[in-house]
Every structure is written in C-alpha cells, then in structure tokens.
Image 1 (cartoon, rainbow, N blue to C red):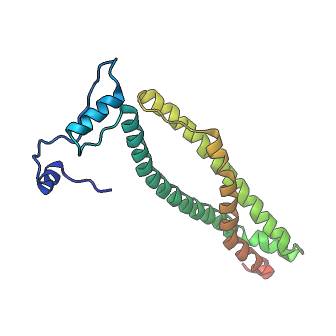
Image 2 (tube, helix red, strand yellow):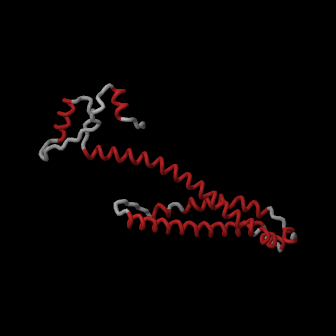
Image 3 (cartoon, rainbow, N blue to C red):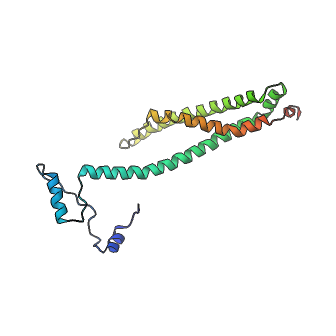
Length: 193
C-alpha cells in the first residue's frame, strides 16, 4: 500500500488534479440498485461501482489490516520488554539474597529446592505485576471514557485471561538466569565478610 499526494498522482496519471476519487450517489428509495450499478458501469466503464455496505466493509477491512500490523509489532515489543523487566527484577532480587541462598546451600538444601524458591518468587512478582496492570488498564479505560466520551475502548476478559499462559512462559524464561546464578552459588559465601 502506498499513500501518494493527490496532485502528484493526478499528474502522473495524466488527469486533472480536481478529478474525483470517489463519487457518492444517493439513489431514490425505490431505485433498483443492480440496474443503477449496471447503468453507471455502462456510462463510466472504468469506474468501480459498489454499494455503501460493500465500500464500508472494504474500508473497515483495510483499516483493520493496517492496525493489525501495528498492534502485532507493539505486542512483540511488549513481550520482549516484559521478559526483560521480569528477568531483571528476578535477577536483582536473587542477587540481593545470594548470601541467604548460600546459607540454605550450607545447611544442605539441594539445587532443586533452590530452583523452586526462585520460581515461586518469580511467579509471585509476575502475578502481582500482571494483576496491577489489568487493574490499571480498567482504570485508564474508565478515565478515558469520562474525559473523552466519544472514544470507545473495549477490554475483553478473554483477551487478558488468554495471556496467562504466555506470562507463565515468560516467567520461566526470565527465571533461567537467576536459577543459573543460584545453583552456582558457593556455600562458602556465608563465611565471607
């Protein structure tokens, strides 16, 4: 899809810049639309004659296609940023408690138990952030509705509930680096000053 200045396009096509792109026709209520379309095609063979409902459906489809690519890109960036934020949060929380993990290792806690602790900590942090984000989203929708009543924003419950499996995958991926750090922690760290 290419957007072009109307005057430049008209000059390139060899038509007047005042040439119309669309002509809307309001037929009589009793007019036969098929006959009218056939008559218009006969008079202007190069015209693309279509009903209002067909035209609107085409424009709506075009708009959805254009916005779908943008939304897909925003979602991808959102997932990457979410993964990085969750990973950084979990990693920072783990590094801050490396002495505690060392103590647990020194008293005999195995790596499997330590991995479980890191994962539980990661899931608690992610769940708190997720529910806070959902609450903020509904709050923003209410605020926008109050300030701009003409703007309609819909949040479908199924859409944010459907993201929970993705959140689980992101949390597990984000926890891999901290888990690696914890399993390599030397219990002797407890005795260092």
